[in-house]
Length: 143
Image (cartoon, rainbow, N blue to C red; front, side, top):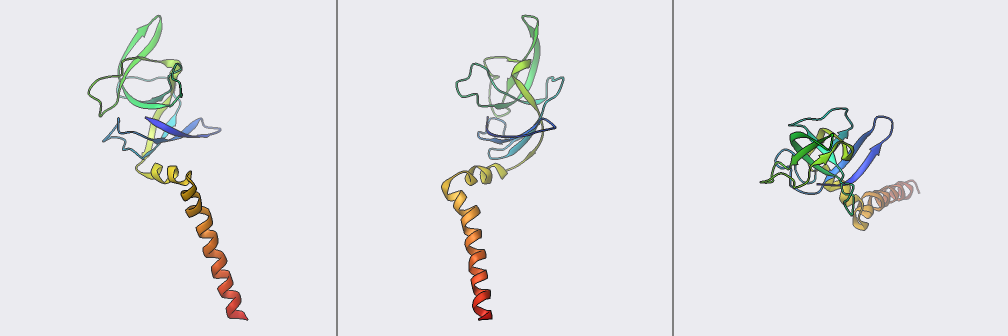
C-alpha cells in the first residue's frame, strides 16, 4: 500500500512512499517507488492503482496476476506478493495510476519523518543552528 505521493509534472511520474509490507520482499516497507503511466498492463506487472469507491483514495501497489474482460472492459486481478490471496475486487483500467518502474529501499522513512515536527526541526532548524554557531565562532576569532 502507498500513502505519500509526489507528482512530477511533464513526464507523469509519481514518487510514492510504501506504507505496508504487502509487496515484500520485492518492495520493502519504507521504500519509495517511481510510478509511470503506461498504455498496456498485463500479468506480472507491478502497478499502482486507486479505488474510486475508497474513502481515503489511498493508492495501492500490487502485482497483476490475471487479466479478464468485465462488462466489455479490461479488468485485472491483483495480489500483494506477501499476501496469501488476491484482492477481492478486480482493478479496472481507469483505476490504474501506472506501472512501478523503480524503487529505492527505506528512503520513504526519511521522507515521512521530514513531515513531522521533530523531522522539520532536525532537517531545517538543526542545520541552521550549526551554520549560525559556526559563523559566530568565525566572528569571535576575527575580533
